[in-house]
Image (cartoon, rainbow, N blue to C red; front, side, top):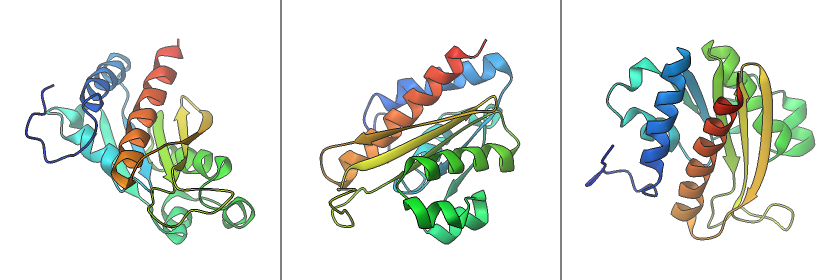
Length: 172
């Protein structure tokens, strides 16, 4: 898929990942959902930039505030209180909540500190947790991305799509 002139400022390799993800989901007759915080809907925008995405993309949430994570995705308040929004347990809960609430077998979640402010010693700018739910199996992975806000967000989108694609390919 060529995205020359696209208004989305995402890294170029996103578009090949979206194509591969679309093929993998269609091959299984599956649909996916996304739950995003620091990326503000960039995964959903990238997926729906592809013509025909209504065949495999169900819906997406931008749950920037903790209250939205709780209300829209069912993230337990206790997880947020104990670990903070940028954490493995919250990324896992966001992915599981998105899959469950959308009624789809595949979902991804992104929560992080894109910057340039908002970081801490424990969770500096560039700290991002990604979560995935594929066929009922939930997993998460933490990253520390470098660069400015746009770079962190772009890298998070790429890593989230790569992670979902890898997990789909591992499903028998």
